[in-house]
Amino acid sequence: MGTLTKATPEPQVIEFLSSNGDTWLPAIVMYELEFGLRILPESKRLEQLRSLQLALLEE
Image 1 (spheres, rainbow, N blue to C red):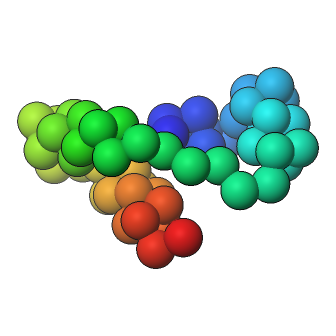
Image 2: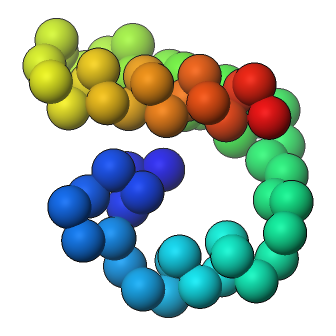
């Protein structure tokens, strides 16, 4: 998830996501992402990650 918010994401990650169409994440992974976001201090980076998390949940 963090790779997608970098100024220059890892090309391998972008290629993987682009070539696989729909990518599904298990519920436990989504829970772990939520937990990780809850323990981070407030910051601009946290806001970016929360936005990405919401986008993942909407798909």
